[in-house]
Length: 283
Image 1 (cartoon, rainbow, N blue to C red):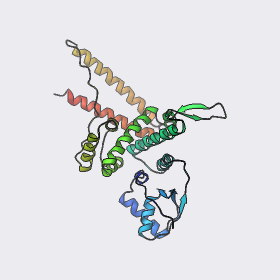
Image 2 (cartoon, rainbow, N blue to C red):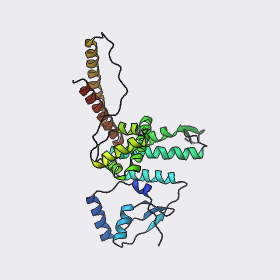
Image 3 (cartoon, one colour):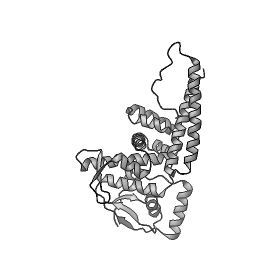
Image 4 (spheres, helix red, strand yellow):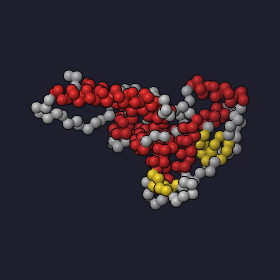
């Protein structure tokens, strides 16, 4: 029997099943056997962790299939695309996967092009090769903006950094058991290890409270400035927000599921920022 290697990095990419779903899978395997082969790469299990665990515990026979990849990063991308295509993911999980895909793709491109992390070559209709940035390629693939992919890369790095400190804190973020602003994670991606450890500990202990991301100091009105002008600008902002809401509602029916998830996260971030502003001026 082939030795199967449990790779923690690969395993961590697979969202844990809830208790009810796991029990349904277990009952099905016991009753019908394992019909789908487990996927391996050089002995490493890359798909079928739950089935492997259940089959091992209940002595259920299973088959394996060996897949070939050039690099470990290619395996990571295969797992990511496999998960994105088959599961209903939370917005945070989707951001994490997109960010991981981008980071892995950059490493592959860098290794193939002599540390040139920005350009890859694609062909269209047998015309001359056309250069396309890695971020643009993934933005098109996931139907989001390039800026979203770049932000997701920071989010995924922060989540991985937290996972290095606490696998439970990482699980809680990805499962939605704890609510944390994506922009907070973006900023955390460049923070010190001590700051990462502090947030990871708060999340695991259940003491973390969702907060707005840090913002640059806002310039205050010049001395002697008119309060009426500030109110006028705020009313203009209110009108702009109302018009934006109408436009978003009109376009929402045409957006994809991933776009809607991203839109929801953006709206939440805006709400948090406005609430923070309200608290600051409410003294």
